[in-house]
Each structure stands twice: as structure tokens, then as C-alpha cells.
Image (cartoon, rainbow, N blue to C red):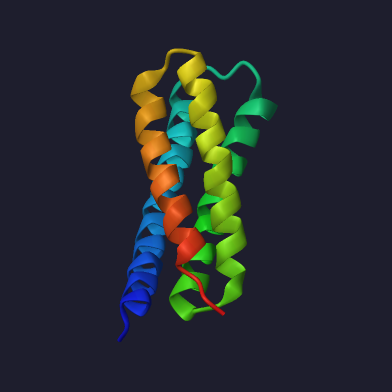
Length: 123
């Protein structure tokens, strides 16, 4: 296997792993939000439900994208690159709000997954 092929398989393997980790993180956040919604007072139920639904949809979407990479299909690449590009933008705004504890891990995870997703698919 040529060197470029091994890099492609390495990027694809990491894209699958990282997308599944991101999916699990979003699912955990959604479950935590449900728990907090049950145990605490929610002032704006519509907005709160929107955050939970968005997190669940994101978790499902990232998991489906990881399956696309695992099956060698093209449908996983674009959503993975787009979602992680958006996450890097969110990390930038977290930095501008001085929330470095959240911004730095988010940026590292998103940038790594972005690069792995970008180079982990070949036609």
C-alpha cells in the first residue's frame, strides 16, 4: 500500500472515531439538558426544548456521517466538514467571550475532525 493510501485510511479511521465521539458528546449534553429540565425550573420551555432537539439531531447526524465514512460512501463527508467548520466558528466566539475552558477543547476537537473528514474520503 503506497504512503498516500495509508494516510487516507488513517484519516478515514480517525474521522469515524472522532465523529462518533462528537456524537456521543452531543447525546450526553442532550441527556444532561433533559435531566436539568426535569430537576430545575425552566423559564422558556420552547428555547430549552429547541436546544435539546438540536443536540439530538446533531448527535444523530454526526453518527450517520460516521457510518458514511465507515461504508466508504460520500454522504458522510460534507456534513462532517460543515458541522466541524461551524464548531470552529463557535469556538472563536467562545474565545471572544473569554470562555477558554470550553473554546480550546472544542476548537482542537473540531479542527482535528475537520481535517480527518476532509482527507478521509476518496472517490
